[in-house]
Image 1: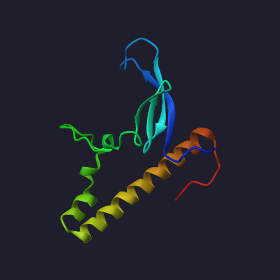
Image 2 (image 1 turned 45 degrees about the vertical axis):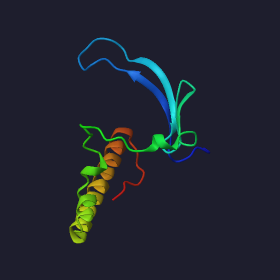
Image 3 (image 1 turned 90 degrees about the horizontal axis):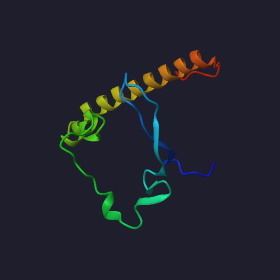
Length: 119
């Protein structure tokens, strides 16, 4: 398709809280590249080439659980516990493979897809 592998695009929607009446409302369109730029409704709000300083990490007092600082393999390696880091990396990768397999199986059941399910 010619798009970089880190490209994204789509609508930014305001969705009513669960159980509340109302339809989703379009706020704006968003597109960009995780490593390059961010546009809202065609207006560029961030571009790594024009302000590389903005690419510095911003640490918040209440980070998401998916923040890489919580990765057990990363933290074990930072502490010099190489064997523990490797076993944690293996555990994480096995969980990712299991999740991928479950998603593929669920998709196959919902869509009647008979394509290969990843093992």
